[in-house]
Image (cartoon, rainbow, N blue to C red):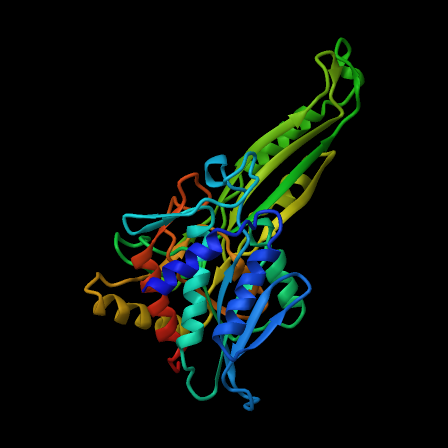
Length: 372
């Protein structure tokens, strides 16, 4: 499907790591040229479009969701120096190479074409959304939700290819979240020759770290699959010079959360005098709450795989946080299904397979036309 590859290349070529405006303009222009949809561009820069079920107050909404921001490119991925200039895009041996090809402008292109081609069933509104700010904490998704974006169901087109086995695009029914937090230990400065005159913040931080090591990692069960999070101290910063008892020490913690559970980090702070706990970022996990929708998504993917002579996809759990977490937190039942394979996103050699993009397009279109 040449149109899909060409649209992917067009979107990938547009720089969008500092300013997503031009990429959003291209998506909006394509929707206006190619569809009769009701199109919105909100104050954050998100692009939203809707079709079908305009006069049915009881209609539900299925959204195909992506994002058009990307992480900063490597020097080799631009035509200039220091991330300046246009993005370099290459197509060779059935893959498209360039910053954002896998994460996730290729999937956005597949969503756009599926949105154009799909005819939603009676009682169904079909939407497509491309958000800004996914790579910096989901700012675009959160803005859209605050402004009333509330689909009943969503297919978030982040990567789910080759999770269960090579050569398949699976349906992720859950993913982990990420909570970044800091334990701040406060002490009293003193000359290091008289340590008893002060309170050593590093010692207090060390005691708090011992408490963290004793905490259980969060865990949950989703669709019969055990989802286990993780908890790790990743940085410690304390002290200013070799001969002063430190009065402050910060401990950075990376926690991978799961649906319905968090580690009890507040206890680690409460157990040690002079230690406070601060949450820096909390990207929510996701679990699909509607078995019928999850099964319908898998059925659509299975039909496409069968038609292509591929192994059957499965329900899987994704280890990374996505905008599906924000949508699920707001009440949308989500699955994740997309072309990116593990290890492709955010790399200097980032790429996506054209045949997998076509596979995803067919899955999105099939599900978009299905009653469930």
